[in-house]
Image 1 (cartoon, one colour):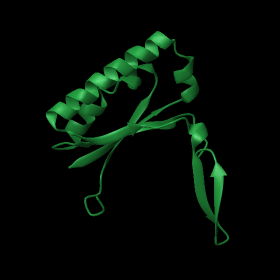
Image 2 (cartoon, one colour):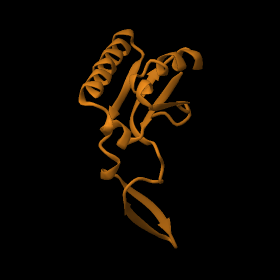
Image 3 (cartoon, helix red, strand yellow):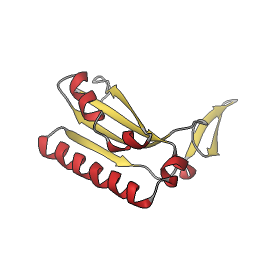
Length: 119
């Protein structure tokens, strides 16, 4: 079963960390991703650019309207994602617990990919 691990953090909190702390988190992150690739669990993922670069589409009165910025005002923003192949939710949660930004205030949402709509 595939799971999406959606990694969120308050961008202001992240930017406020000392550069050495951010570098250590990202070093550990790369090591974890390499481990997932080597084990065959990693299916893909990416780090996203800042929420300031987002554009949101909404339909209003039958017209599609674009807005600069994220889809919602939130304390945490989606910073990146990973799609992993796991035996079950417990295995996906075990991987998610190891995502380094958790230790500096981030969060990870784990959600199964719907196999009926997987491309």
